[in-house]
Image: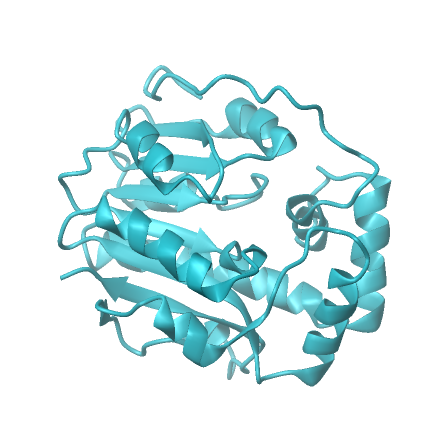
Length: 271
C-alpha cells in the first residue's frame, strides 16, 4: 500500500493452507503467475488436462476486466472501484488499468484469502494522485465491505462494483443475487456493476471439467446459465452489447475474430 491508502484491515489470523488447492492460486497459475504451491499446480494441470481451454478462459476473463475498466474510466468517467474477490495480484490489476488513464482513481480490493491479503499489501501500490486499499472481508458480508470501503471511497459518488469470477463460488443462486443487491444498495445512482463468471450452455467439455473439479474436495465453483448471470443485472441499464461471452465484449480493434467461450459478463448502470 501507499500513504494514500486507507488504514488496512487487521491481518488475517489463519495461516495459508498449502495442502488444499485454492482457486485464486490456481487462477494465478493459469495466468502464468508464480504465487502458487505444488498442490495448486497439480490441480491446475489436472483441470487443464481434462479441458485445455481453461487457460484461454482465464486469460480472456483477465482481458475482459482490463477492457471493461478502461471503458468505465475513459467513456463513463468512473474514478472509484470496489473490486470484491480480487484474487492474487497479477499483471494489469484494477488500479493499474484505471490509474493508467486517470491517476486520481481510487480502488478498494476485497478478499479474505490470507495469501491474497499478504500479496495485496505488498504489491498494490497506488499512483500518488489516487489511492488503493485492501479490505480483509468475506463476500458474504456486504455491509461490512461497504463500511470498510467508505474509508477510501466516497460512496456518495458513482462507483464501479467489480465481481470477477467470484459469484460462482456461492452455491445458492438466490443468495448470490442477494449479495449483489446488498452491495449495490450501498452505491449511488450512476454506479456500475461489472460481472464476469463461468457459464453453462457454451462448452460441454468445460462443464464436465468443472463438475469433476467440484467433486475433488476443493472449494467448488458453479457454472451458471447465461440467463442467471443476466439476472444479477435486474433493475440496471445494460451497457451495449449486454451480457455476452467475454471475448465479444468491446474487443480490441486488433483482436482477430474473437470466438465465444464459457465465460460471460457485462456492465450495468444503476438508475
